[in-house]
Image 1 (cartoon, rainbow, N blue to C red):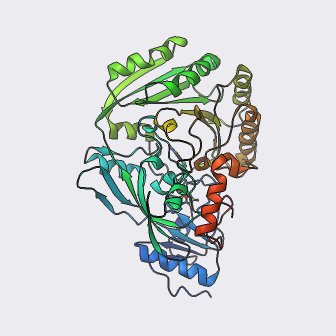
Image 2 (image 1 turned 90 degrees about the vertical axis):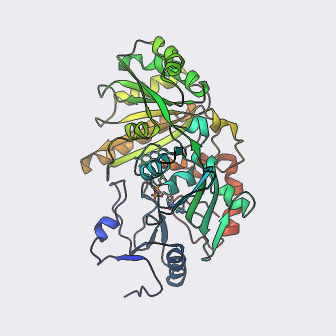
Image 3 (image 1 turned 120 degrees about the vertical axis):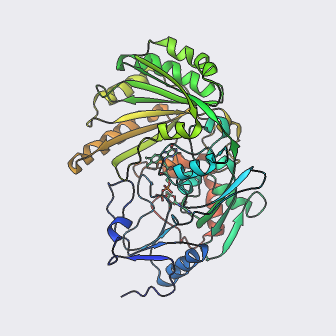
Length: 440
Ligand SMILES: Cc1cc2nc3c(=O)[nH]c(=O)nc-3n(C[C@H](O)[C@H](O)[C@H](O)COP(=O)(O)OP(=O)(O)OC[C@H]3O[C@@H](n4cnc5c(N)ncnc54)[C@H](O)[C@@H]3O)c2cc1C
């Protein structure tokens, strides 16, 4: 039997109580059996786990919140470094930045910052961890105003593949700092803490409108040339559910008054009469709760993504309609997240996150509850994604998909060669490798 000597932290073996819970990720589609899961309570636990893996030559994965679409934070027969117990939290004296442990999930982070009237622009899901989110880019309801979450990263601490603690920022290890802002998930080392720029926040306003399926073409034709260019205080989303599964809907958050928001979204309201229209003003925290919904432990799903750089022509909209009409599941949909604003103001080579000039991201989404429905839903996602390839470009690494053949180019585009150089420099032995880690 393998000795755990040298490992510290909370060690879960296959024989430990709680193993079955500890080995599960958010996406219930995966059923993996790691040998050891180490819940790291401090940086020394992480260092010890890395040194132990080097000695025993076992596969290694890093886990933050376990939300990887393809369960890249799990591996059969290996060791998982789980950073979820790392929950340090310190706001700087001038309130301009916050240093947090790498285990923070979004709702607890929003709540802790809200107490000081602050925010960092994270994503919508309450249980996603800042680690994976930041390292892949990080899009959310404030992105068009404040940029991607990685654009607000000032510094991080990492345990390298050699087991050393380093600090990376614009002047210390700037190449690694560059790579981890969009291309850093599980490929270079284990991040143990992040320092983010904070922004003051108070009340915000939001809207939600719905339309019949018949309005799809008119709606998308308008939204795609409006939302990416709208006032950058507005971040707008569009959801197109499969036919007969609810109305088309657009919602968004505006950092400003409801009165101003009403006038900004009036053109959207006027292109095709919505079935319902709602406006609300509430605290940022209440808004984050509303968009996040009720936290879910696990779902069975397959999602994928692409980016739109030029407005979709009508033929592409016909393709979307026919895919939505042939959905095998009742809750499948495609969603668009508006880019532009602050996202587009950072040059594409300034961080590893490359898709700066996209108009919006497309997310193909499929959910089911019965295991026998898995194959047909996965096939639907792949058919949907493939059929729109003539009109889309690339994909978002945070919405990772094992079925994308040339995923390195899709995720990282022209930034791929530099990412490979950083990988060669920091992890020449490829200790941190998984199905879609940065190749050497
Ligand atoms: C329900 C849901 C909602 C989502 N909403 C959004 C959204 O609004 N915006 C958005 O941009 N994305 C969103 N995502 C995608 C999300 O950003 C990614 O799935 C992200 O990678 C999850 O990070 P995690 O730490 O929770 O997951 P994990 O599975 O733990 O990690 C994801 C990847 O990051 C690596 N990693 C994790 N922690 C570390 C660390 N400390 N050091 C080094 N590598 C690490 C892992 O090895 C893995 O490769 C959503 C995902 C889900 C499931």
